[in-house]
Length: 156
Image 1 (cartoon, rainbow, N blue to C red):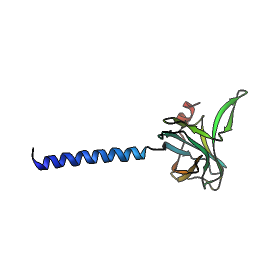
Image 2 (cartoon, rainbow, N blue to C red):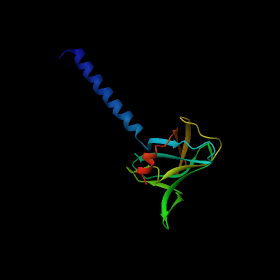
Image 3 (spheres, one colour):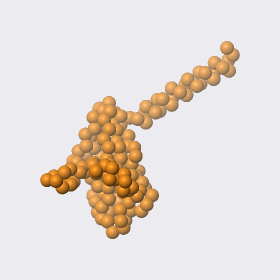
Image 4 (cartoon, helix red, strand yellow):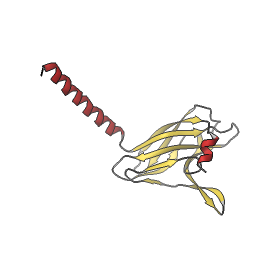
């Protein structure tokens, strides 16, 4: 074998291992996917956000509160059927065991933006911060989108 081939092979293995290590680093803690906020009519005082969150840590992670500057109050809620009617219930603490994923979707668990400071705009980027029980915070940028009625009805 020639020296160039061996050096190339060693470099390829090194970069492959480095990329795997970086990918592994990226997957620690909470990972948010498919996040979006529902575009509300300009007169609406509230809106909702959706995402899937996965705990890639080796230990349980608890989300104790949520913050955003676009609303006076931000919280996690769940939809329930109470006496035959839909009702919202506040989730005071979301507990995610190691490896667990939770989907926040229309008709189910969701992020509430209560008391919008100003109307949301289509494609607007909204910063949402999740406060964890260990005192750390994790920011997520969500985009405002129109909700497809078919998609929403599918979840009910």
